Length: 549
Image (cartoon, rainbow, N blue to C red; front, side, top):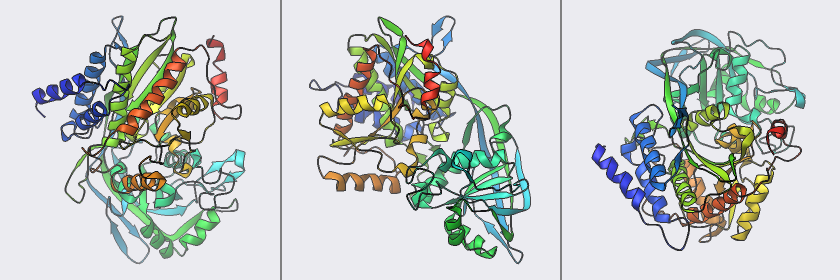
């Protein structure tokens, strides 16, 4: 897009009038989403022209609102950003991959049969021949649950085939919380665990229900540019190959190796499971990887407090999406990310504007727009490891990721099922608007580990990711669920996630009033919310208690 056009869009969004009867104007929200999810922003990938435009848009909006720069100190003054060094990894040239079963060799297609991620272990070339395949069930080593899927089997020189989610996903009962996914069920854990065990690679068998999304999402999320934090020893976290495989192909490979996929899957749901090598079945692969270190940016704005300005309430959202990638059936290659997470950008900008218009609270309020969420929560992970404001003095984090642009609902939910004071306060505030709390309707999807609040939660900071409800005022649960399911199947992580003039944004405007109320209450209080006594995050928070008054 021409620079002049970009400035006009920035100006138009910054000067749109707010509705006089409410804090948040649906039309302003719509305009923000329309701008940042336009083709001109090229899908907002880190380290791209889209990043440059997005960062400029955010800074312009925060300035127009009258906020202070909240980023890193330089020359004694704060700027608007925090540099985020990231490893950038991209497959260059053709991907040659084939499977051999002792009788014939079959070529496999990147994106169709397999979704292979660019290697992040430091290798410039992935090249191996006839590596055996070993099925390791769910790939879990959980001593506290007396669970070991490996039974001492050495994975060095082998490729591990692994199931997604937890062993009790299908039965709904067992050692891993039933339907609610634990971190052992996340694909990130699977990749990390096989790398720790020295495997040549990890190949996750994709199944839509336990993954919570279809193959299109897997392909689009894994065959483009990869990012990671800069690691001293990357091979300890990443095996040479990290990939997903279509279920039908996996079933066929099991059969060729003298095994039955469904039978072994059932065995993998028990403690007695032992790894099984697919006899005579091997995989070969060769592809080059371009590895660089780049600097992306988090954007931060500050509404400075008065009496307790050294204590911080934080609102966060990620500004990035997938950028330009594989074409869809219509030939569209721009992954616009209107809902995910244009809505979060709009919410953060408008939340900042409202706080700037109101009297300054006692505590400071930080507005954090993070990079590279779509690449594994990289921006929030970097911030949490290198905080601009002390985590011990961060009262709580309210994360906003992919809100509904439709009408109002009678309920709301959050990502995951954690218990903590911040949720109690959110439930109470929503009750004032006659909204009820509904627990995460799909805890098996592992949403708690899939959004930026997790980077703070695992370090003890009370953090919540608000999700829109599904009980629509106009249409009820049937309409809400139908819309959610349609988005997941047809638009999530696909070029079709585009702004629509039909979206009213009225529900989102109401929801933001609730989130403003919760944050404002925290910012004007002196109390410190905490996790429940049995939470896995309670210990980390309590360890820093002496730093809070």
